Amino acid sequence: MDGLPTFDGRQLTAARTLAGMTVANLAEKADVTPRTVHRIEIGGPFSVSPSRRHGYVSADVWDRIVGALEEAGVELLPEGGMHGSGTRWALPRSERAKPPQE
Image 1: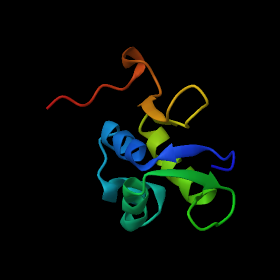
Image 2: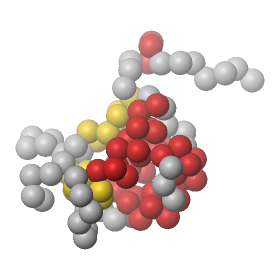
Image 3: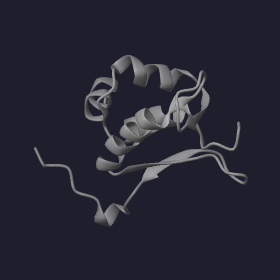
């Protein structure tokens, strides 16, 4: 796909779930609409473009979504020549904040 970073909508769903966020939570933190998050999640593979292009996610929108996930400690990995796209914790378990005890 044009040599631009390629991700997958299901990857965003996985990252959002790993971060413990709803579509509405992520949209609010990223300053985008819930519809934008939902459209990306159900859209399958996509590329990120530095400018608005039909069929692509703009870098501005994507950067805000990724930033919100990074604040929650989750990374998105673009598809590469030898591996598919993915998501993971940014820090090992021993270094992540512990959830509050109830």
